[in-house]
Image (cartoon, rainbow over all chains, first blue to last red; front, side, top):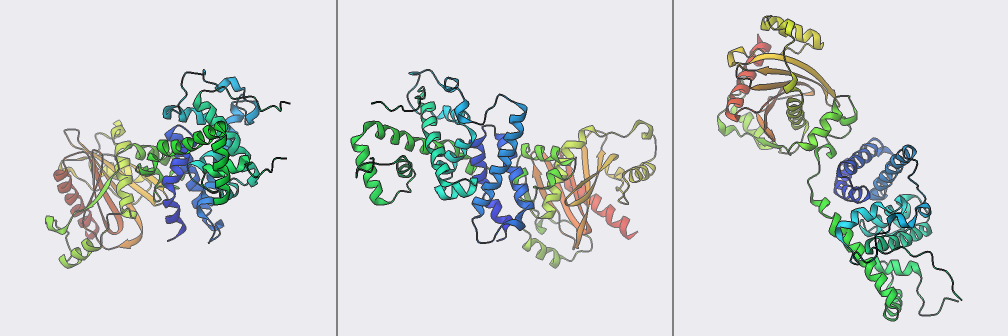
Length: 172
Length: 277
């Protein structure tokens, strides 16, 4: 089986990941299309015997990062830095619902900083090992863990409608 | 210090949730959870989040892959100014089905020996090879361009023969559209489409009732034996297509399928006689 065919086998998973990453179906498929086109034009750069999934997800990550860079250049209020987003901005009134509601998932994910969203989905949805996530995103594994930890807790709070707690203070 | 035997790290909590923690560490996390309701709630929610991802997004895995993401459609979409439009439209059209028409339907294939036809039928696949790609492009081109096509006013009164010449000159191709007046169709216009597969000439015809038919002719990179007609359907559009030597042909229309097959036969005969004559 040549790379082209193998790439095609990854399409459903790429689409699933893109759909979770970007809520809009058309835009998500655009991302998949751009990713596949770029991958197909660079099959020569793929090292046989290495993980094709990590390779193509890396390409998707790069395409996505480029797109959001361009988008954030147009929309200056979009901050990439997680800590700069006011917590109140994405807090749902407490007590409205305590359960993890399906319909809120799309929305809540979009409120996560992009780099946390990626890690969270690669781990939780794509079920990559932490090492593969590090490889895919080109970051140290420690960074994977800290993004996972922060992203998960943030998403949990968003879904539960809880005001995120200000970072734990040491009380003596 | 935090390295009491019962302490668990944040990383371990996540590895526990993601099922990547070694057994002995799992046990420690389990003990910690049993003693710490807050941790238990957190871990429970983390599990729920992972499950929720799958519940919410796994359905994408079983969705049919849109045409524009299929291997034989990819790359072409950025190749020419014409194609982004097609790519988008292809995604919205119903998924086409290539159906080989068996030799048993009694079609005439001119000089083809029955034995050869049978073998062609046997080896034919329903997958998307380059001929199928032609059919798909033809179906899309029919939908995209047909409604807007009309003869330029200054050429309405010209004879068919003159119009054919004018059109071929304008398109800059030596591919001439066949005249289908005897079948009741008048040539209305033409267009050249370029993409990875090469150049495809399309010609639009209309009958007196306003029914529209598109004939696409594509020069093949490799010559091939004549094939039987195949039917491709894309929503309301039927496409009969075939290969004859250096060219691939596709006739698309929304008219009755039987009538379209008859017309395809007429066209095939006319093209063959034009070549040999």
